[in-house]
Amino acid sequence: MEHDRMKRSLGHLGIPVADYRVLKLLPLIYVAWADGKMDLVKRERIHAFAAQEYDLSAAGVAVLERWLTQRPGPEYISEGLHDIFLLATAEDDMEIDFSELPGLLTYAERIADNTGTALNRERAASACTERALEEVARELHIDHGESWATLLNELQ
Image 1 (cartoon, rainbow, N blue to C red):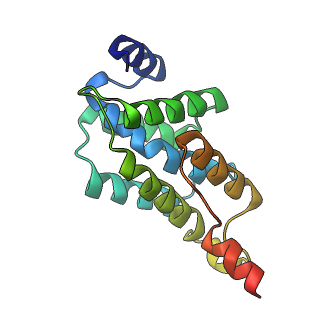
Image 2 (cartoon, rainbow, N blue to C red):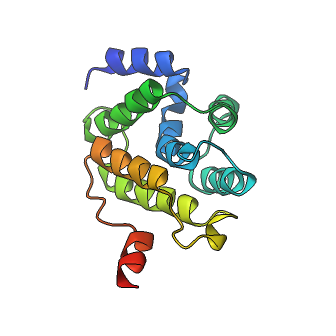
């Protein structure tokens, strides 16, 4: 991978190069915002996941906070997801393990399904959320299959 290209892209996204791992949270952010709002349950789940899985610097936490309070635009999301895939397939020192990507999608699906309002809906994930999950899977080149919510809905 072209290291300079990634530095430019991270700069464009407002992510310090040393905090490139915060990109792994972007699929969760995208799916959480899919219905147009970021509720407290989603925020708390994403914060808990970030604290448990990543050792973010203050600058990385600031990027995450920005994503949680201001919905990233479609171009931003597209560039970030593309960068995740490039990092996952790179052979240089700034990389993300490709085997992590399906787990990110699974956790994004859990965030979508386990919100406060999801418990009161027949189908936990909205159509917007399902489209976001499908887009994340496509951009990261991973098999999304069907969500548990979709499978359970079909069985009824």
